[in-house]
Amino acid sequence: MNDFAKLDGIPNIILDLNENHLKMAKPLSSEAQRLKEIIDFDKRIYFIVLVFLFLIIRYLTNTLILESIPDYDALESRGDFMIFHIFNALNYIWTPFALLWKFTVISFLFWVGAFIIGFKVPYKELWKFALVAEVIFIFPELIRLLAFLDPSSTVTYQEIDEYRALSMLSLLGPENVADKFHYALGTINVFEIFYGILWLYGFHMISNRSLGESSIVVILSYYFPLAIWLTFYVLVYKG
Image (cartoon, rainbow, N blue to C red):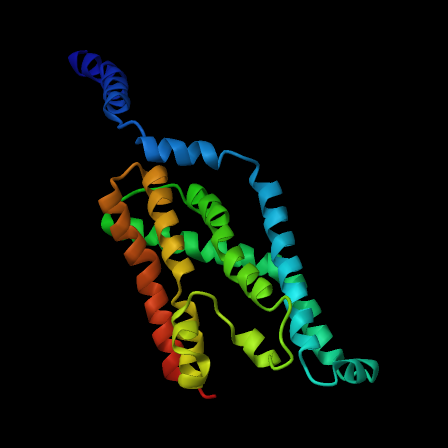
C-alpha cells in the first residue's frame, strides 16, 4: 500500500516540475519581442506577394537583357529567341517551388546546427522565418533592374546578366576575374551579411537564446555550408 501511495504522488511531482519550468522560462528580449510583433502577419499572403515581386522583377530584367542584344527586333521577328522565351517561362513557373525548396533547406540547416550545439528549436518556426527573411534577396535583383533601366547603347546583355550589386564581383569587375570565380564572388555580397544579421535576431527570437549563442548557430548553419558550397563550385567548374 505504501508503494501505491508513493506512486500516487508522482503526477503531482511532474506538475510541480512543469510549473517551476514555466516560472523559470526567460521572457523574450525587447529585440525579439519587437521582431515577433513585426512578422506577425499572414505568411501565405506574404509568400504570394514575394513570388509576385520576384516574377515581375525577373521578367523586366529578362526583357532588358533581350533588348540589349544587337538587332533584337529583327531576331525577335524571326523567332530566334524562342528557346530563350521557353527557358524563361519555365524559370517563372519554377520560381515558387524553388523558393519553397530553399526555405526547406535553409530551415533544416538551422535546425541541424542548433541540434549539434544542443539547442532544441521548432522546425516549423524556422521555416516560417526563412520565408520572411527571403525578402532581403528582392533588393539585389531590384537594384540590377534599376541600374539598367535606361542602359546605354554600349551595354551588353552579358553585363546585365552578370551584374551583382554590392558584391565582391562588382567591386573587382567581372572582366578582371576568371569565369570560375564569378558565381562565388557574386554570392559574397552585402545582402548575404544582412541576411545573416536577420537570421541572428530571428534565431534569437525563436530559441530565446542569447545573441552570442545565436551568432554561433548562424555561422555554423548558414555561412559554413555556404562556404563549402562556393568552394565546391569553384573546384568543379568546367567553364
